[in-house]
Length: 376
Image (cartoon, rainbow, N blue to C red; front, side, top):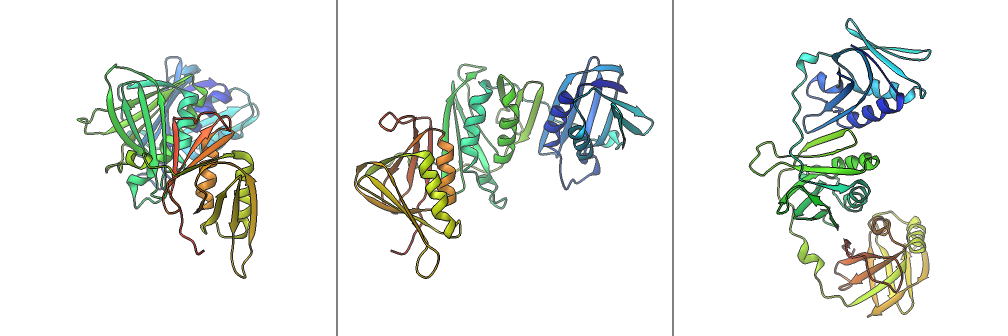
């Protein structure tokens, strides 16, 4: 095997595939990246048996061949090389990587012991990559991090014809984003639950593609796979077991008041006031008249207060939130203003974006945040 390729194309492909490599594999071969040079293209693949990634790109192939090399080392080498053509050649049981005056020799792993990787399921539909990346980022922020509750670490995907709804929750907040797409079949209807980290990395890495194809295997398929594809890259992932909790009723509540706040100064205030206390201690907010007062700390401890302007409709309200979760929601709305809808001091609040203070809310994203109890 011998081929030459540009540094950027190789590095991009290696970076993509390396995301699926296991840090603690059950077999040594899963530490590797498969390099398959055939025809006029090079195919890369890697897997941890739960998630598999593949990439392909054009190359000047002198001799075709297939080899398995240590993935982490190959990734670090590619990232370190200058933007010059790279030649990769198999020499016995070693792989030579050459770029200009730089030369590396890598050991090979047993390609015969490498597992067969699943194929991408048939495409379910297509969405613009920037829309997909934004939607996933807005939702994945609310996914849980506790692997002992795997269902809550996932992003739930619900597809109904030309509409896709993403949702995630860690029990303390819930994020829901809707967008339209182009389904492969007009009457398509299906669901999937994928790891939040997996779908977030895929969406972010595929931003360079014009469109992203989403594939979800039918429920009768025992492999229970879903996948993404775009710009010569594919990723397949096994769906999480379990049932995502019902959530739509939480978004349909009796609103007693709403506050519209400019996001940037509000976010800055939240971060400043939260400096005096642990990030899990309640940040107290009092919405009254034309201002919201923020307060943290009490007694002999450090304390901080600040007030900023708001547009309040309805009853004044005092409420407390986890400052980190509030900051996450303010960043996720992605608009200059945010509308916070209240159902009570001890009930969830819902954040929605607004492009103008007196304009309409952006209906496609909701961030529900549970309040925290605090001493008066």
